Length: 72
Image (cartoon, rainbow, N blue to C red; front, side, top):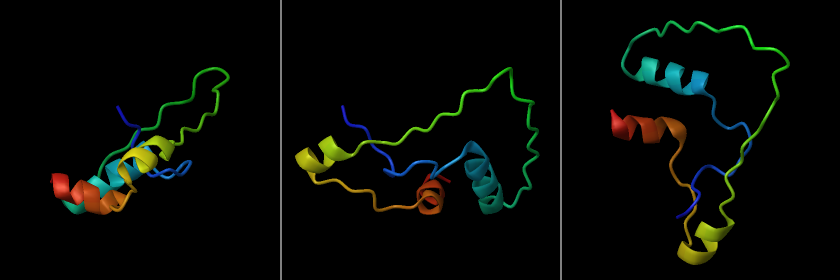
């Protein structure tokens, strides 16, 4: 099993995915933000590509919009 991603912190948010898909299918998404719960804990996830690079020579080559476009 390999961890795949862009290898950068905060490079993608759910809002960005929704807005990008909406633009691609010509729909204005309605995004309702809920109030944060008590004492939200900030977090960042960064994909560690060390193993997949070493074993397979893999590097991310497709950006978010291109990848989403290939799914639509």
